[in-house]
Image (cartoon, rainbow, N blue to C red):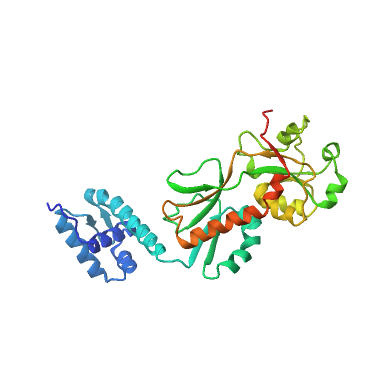
Length: 312
């Protein structure tokens, strides 16, 4: 039995036939004739010295040897395809594909993209608003922005500014609920997207930080942070706004921070990319632009007293 690997064309023919369990469908996928595909598989079987398929009247089935070979060929071609796409991306300095959660995309990225486009007209931005944990190499993603406690140590990971939550509301509502006692009677909005945080950074924790034993539960609840903030912008009520998602609205006067105490949270946004890719021109430009944009609203945090949440 020969130790050298057989030709890739023969392995590709086998992989397609094993996935489809049909020589005809495999030939169609590879744009070859069924006779040509059958010839490639026959040559592979001769190379191995054993049959890989049992041929039946209208179907094929893997032999024991074929079943042993199939997973490895599928994984191998997938790995090759991923590596090839990664190599291609390194040659492309005009396109930048970014993934971020829907809330961050809507509230942080989208309102600021005009500035990036103006400063970098040669970079074509593509966005995937998703919370799905992606494989940056496999999914052809250049940059991921993720809100998390920890991140994959194999990636290049730059922590962005420390996050906090604090009550935010429209100026009109702020005039109606100007102090702590009146806030207890205000319509409170609940952002359930941060329920995973430990210790909790919720309304009860914020009131404890203010020296009040008050644990509200009644009010509209939202699973997406941007929806909760949109409700606050519409005057529905008061929300514990996350720094990154509300600073632009605060800076531009649509929302206000009547209280100067904010809760720190045990998570933050991270700028992630493949290790070694952080200095590719478009990734470096995007990273530096994000940091500059964060600095524009740093004064809002400077006015606050940020305290850790207390245990109940």
